Length: 96
Length: 252
Image (cartoon, rainbow over all chains, first blue to last red; front, side):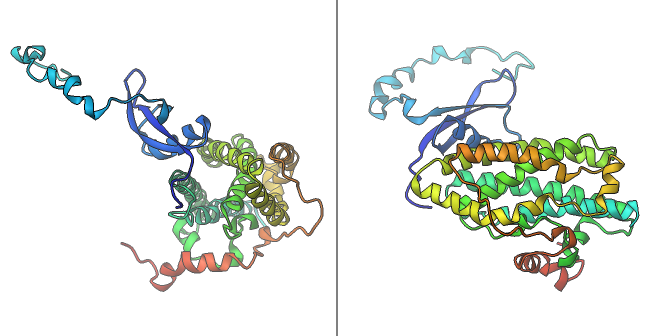
């Protein structure tokens, strides 16, 4: 393989079954959306992992800066009252 | 030749086509231009292998000689293979392999669509499974032919060279073994020659859109329905059959 294929990078999101969330599966190279969908299909659905695919140009994603981590995320660390840890788990509730 | 032998050969004709094309596609494993295409081509190889397995298994049942699909794949001589010549040609560059995939899958779209209506329920069931796979092969390959044909001067030249090189072997794909006509009359097999006009219409349109020129002159090579192959099938079988020939019935 030559130095990175020069094709654009796309992020792939997959829905495992109808109604569930689209989850990030990985990324593929492709020249356009049509090719990106095919490449995502070939790369990530070979073992029946999905029923629907989104592809998004990686450049369209706005990501948080690690330098901002202290102001973005640290303030949540000492707010344990935001977690439902003071409740007894109802019997049979698995998805909480 | 009776109807049973004709059906046996018909299954070999379709099954061998899938088997040998699968072999060529699998040679792309770790060699494709990009990782995504490596996965796509090897997926196609597996699709074709599954199709070959089903057809050769059925061939063995029709023959009634206790031959399994493995026996037919690994213990049959070159002259008994009935795959179309186009499948055995070496991979060449990505343009050549992609073009072959396009020309073959365009044909298989017509073939398996028609075979859905076969009076033979096994063949109709195999067609129902295969047509879904072939639709995708066709969509994928036709996109690439378009991109490369109507792409850069380099990709266009490679695609045009591939077309010039493959064209003498295309007509052989449609050839009917004389015994297959009985099966067509019984509503079991598809008359492959009758598929050519619609195939040509579709393929010519896409090749024109891809700014490629179909060679109008030149030799047309035939022979696959008689088991007469190019020099390239022998080496494939040498490699594919080596283990079962050297260690008959080896299992692991």
